[in-house]
Length: 409
Image 1: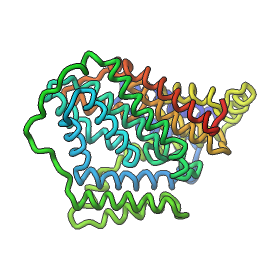
Image 2: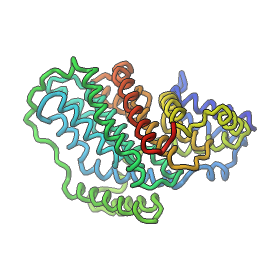
Image 3: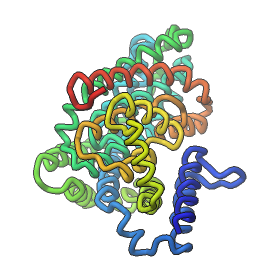
Image 4: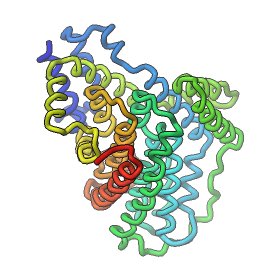
């Protein structure tokens, strides 16, 4: 059975790297689901083993946080934020800075994927109406959302996973990761400004005289209260996923927003991807090949317990198989007994996602939503700024983790 398990594991992670199966309309979630089905059909795992492999608390936390973010989406916060950014006064450089800061700070609490999904089409159309090339601003949106999401343990899916596995405290995580993430927002701005200076020297035309959409005050207030309550619960001994579910449940008690719409805003594809990857990686970790591989890495001194190995590993893995599958695989194979490497994994895997268009789901969302709005953000467009800003921000993060003695070189 080990041969079947290893074969399906390889199929899954090659599929994660390619993003699809050539000749088929099978995406990453479909690939992971097909592999999980193969494990069950072949007898390599039974249903009980597959169920035990799935980290239910992590999925519950992800689900609950998506409900909280859906509250703001239904309130119109993201539409208002994108419209205000596009209509900001001042130079192109200032509009770019506002784009990066808004997307980064929103992503720290409300999850980067949902933020960029809602903001991309409004931002693209808004800056285009002002006579500007939307591409550098869309790069700023994606780069800022990725960097900003590194600030907190709930900013993106991989941080949520790492935080759950390691039992990381919300506030201690911010102490370790918020400063390099904030510095990275400025680095993203300066790099895009430098590398896209031709497009960003254009003087923006006055914004169109159309009213900026305003969020529903009551629904927006509910969302703010939910965030405050959520952060307060994170300071208690209540399990994080239970506290988040409590907040999500209270938000569903609405006279104006249908629970069907709120639950429909949940990214079920991402939750299914997580569940299937839990099954596949657990099956592989139980094989002799997995333990042998970890022993060989340890003997060669290549375990990612130091910055000199963690940084290049996260950079390579995040831009091949993706930062979510990479962190899930690493956590399933490598027993981490210290918080320092977990902080490093979260921070570096997130910042590494800015390297290439395929580095994070947020990047792909921006490119696809922009294309639907008539703006083509190509692989080379992204890499032009993504490579230097990723290398620079990861250098900042490595220096910070080393100086704070969270990890050794």
